Length: 613
Image (cartoon, rainbow, N blue to C red; front, top):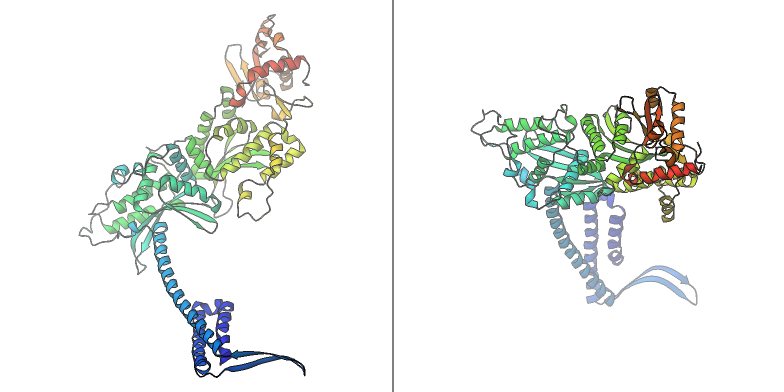
């Protein structure tokens, strides 16, 4: 009995700790409480025998040393002092257990209240559910003929202005990001019989990788609506409250979505106002059928993609930045070290991609010669790709991989903008890679290796869930990349030479050919062969004429000895009643201011025979 007082609590603890998963929470509670109760009863009995009656008990467990001189053994001695302390210990232990039980009850109550609040804010909009869809109606025969889209969001519901002033550029960015990552959802709630619908819940959601939790919290803080939660490897921004949904609608009323998300938004908005702002005489069954019809034709179930006639696709810089942060990509093709910017979406977004191309052509700051090159060659490419699997969809993409356009136009266009997602880190690395490749430093083996190493830290390689090993550049290696020596020289007429050998690098030539005809009109040609065909020469012959003219010094081209010499002053060469010259393109704003000095320096260099043909 006396050993059981000590063994029972230990036994209960071991069984609950080692076999807790098998016996479950209830089983663990039963075993530990039973052992503790039995131990308490036995301790009470021992307190009576030893403490009150004064009968100490000694239990010999095992002998250790047995000899004629020394005898050592292990034993338990239960005297009055021992049982007094044991009784005090059990009293304290029982009291502690009772206190823990009370605290556990309070903890469960607090967590239950917190869980209900989180559930109502993140998953179910309480304001939406509280309004039942189906009520007794005296006009059950009424048909749903009301034009639901005849309403003003700003008049009927809280507008965005009630949340205070929000930067319009951020709102444009948010709309572009929604076009890429947002989703409008209508969820029906069933009655207890699981046969009919009792209510609807309206939700707007953006789901990203958990590494981009920061951007979702920025959206939440700046809009001051919605909530953010993290689930496994995803983070989710969601809006479900009726008042907050109306604020969201006011944003999309002012800044239109451009992709097919706009059609989902229109259906979402119609269902929302039909549910919350319907006329009292409408038939509930008709309302249910209409909302279900809208829901079943949204998102992946959509078949018709025709936009309303009064809606236009409007591309702005901030919208495009948001769209790029969702669906854009900056990466390096590693086999030939080609930097590529790509923007990809489903094939039905082709009209949006065409508008983006138009916007880039108009906004990147191309001069007339560069714009001609862009519009007549594959510089900004729109391509379609068929679905790879049964469950996938065909896609359309817009791609730029011309290093001059990337380095001199696209990167300067976005480098002062605020990237909110981790795409900004990819853009910064992409900017470094483009600079090094544009200057020809990649032709140095050490620099080439560093470029490849940097590219292996971009995009998915930088995700916290990436399982492979990622080796980031050290500060010293980054400095080497940033300060790499250029290996090419770009000439004023668009040709590029090796800075060491001074030989022309044909693959890097970037120019158009301007031709003045005998009738006084100007013609532009994209390539040497096209220009040669116009003037009636072989390409090699025309190239020699142009190279010879470029080899003349500025003074020689200015000598007024003949009509041909006079044209050379402006860089033209007279050939068969035509005047032709190379014109460098894609210089960008960074280099355009230097062209004048470059032209004169180039003439001096040729005079000193620094360049080889």
